[in-house]
Image (cartoon, rainbow, N blue to C red; front, side):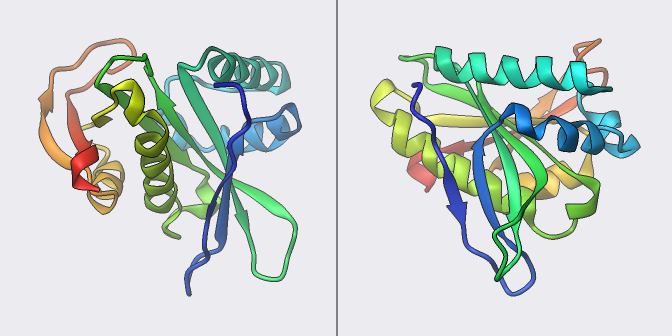
Length: 189
């Protein structure tokens, strides 16, 4: 799948509208800034410390789109009455393989956008898009993994209609602590 995908999520009374689109090199500065957040760095495995790292990371996301196996979206907030977009997060659908019944979702939210419902709303949009787009290829289930002590991710999973499935053992170095596996099935939409 190489065609660009842009998803739109309507504003709520307390949160801006969201635009989800593939990452661009023009996003690198905002990506580096978001990556400086110590809380975010605690949970993610792909650290972006500078513009060179950021450009490399964006190119990796572009390759994932071109290969049809990883679909990373820059999540942008748009204030009512404004055309200016601000990076508020990342949402990714990964481990996509035609004929495989499951894929994985992942996300992060920039520090300035936490508590605004960005992650659950973006998660819902990407989940619906994935099922609508990939069901013909056999996609039946989306999996969301997070470390057991990441309570915010657990709340996002619940809000996104991902049911708790089981505890997974740690798998260092990428997953140093036990984790939760949450699942959303196409039939549960």
